[in-house]
Amino acid sequence: MLVELTKVMLQDGNTCQQAVNLNLKNIEVFGEHFPVTVSAPAELMITNSGKGILVIEVRADVQVMIPCARCLEEVKYDFALDTTRKVDMKLSAEEMDEAEEEYNFIEKNQLNVDKLVQNELLVNWPIRVLCKEDCKGICSRCGANLNHGDCGCDREALDPRMAAIQDIFSKFKEV
Image (cartoon, rainbow, N blue to C red; front, top):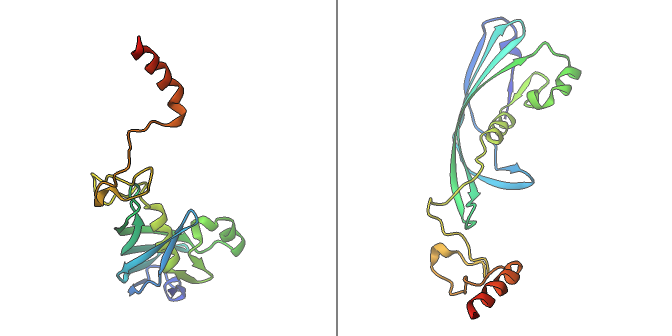
């Protein structure tokens, strides 16, 4: 959703406050797409603090489906975003292009709220998500989810790289 910034920029001290519906269907992280299941309207407050500086405050609640790091089951992960950004609107188009990562949510005199929220989701992205603290993961042999029950595979077998060491131990047992 694009929000026009020209009215706020007209005079120092101007503010704009509104609720903005987000149009996020999924978010891309490291080439993977994660579906956004719930996104409440974002609360937006834009203030002209003078000298061409806009203070943008955003509060948004977003829910994303992220696979569990152990068993790969989908987990609903809630983000409660509350951020403040300062934007120097005096910068030329070339200077904004150079600082693209910092100002990529500004398009001419418009604020792309979806892009700003997506940036904040990326900054707050969890390192690891688990479906539950005691998640058992998946079987290394058959790939079955061990949270649903035992698959019956023999998980006592050693790694083939350890076969030489196993031979050494078995020789000492025979003595």
